[in-house]
Length: 75
Image 1: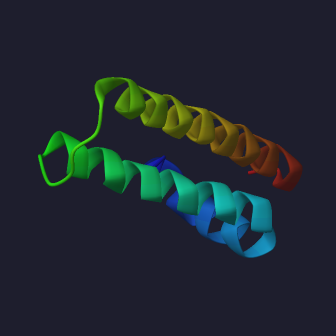
Image 2: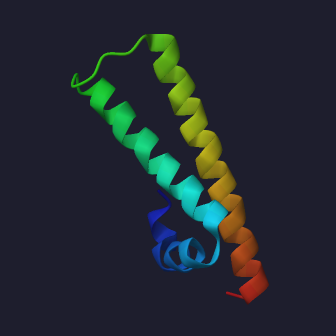
């Protein structure tokens, strides 16, 4: 997720427990979605779409937190 911000993400995860939780949940969803799409797990289409929307919402929230961090630290 947001690979271009790896350094900032590493710092925020240590400083902000909420961000760390969002990041971890996003990665969990990413793996679950991949498992379904590659046939290792079965899931109804509607449930899969719900997971994709949650993953996107988490990514948006994390991105906003990254932008706020950059602004706060003048990066």
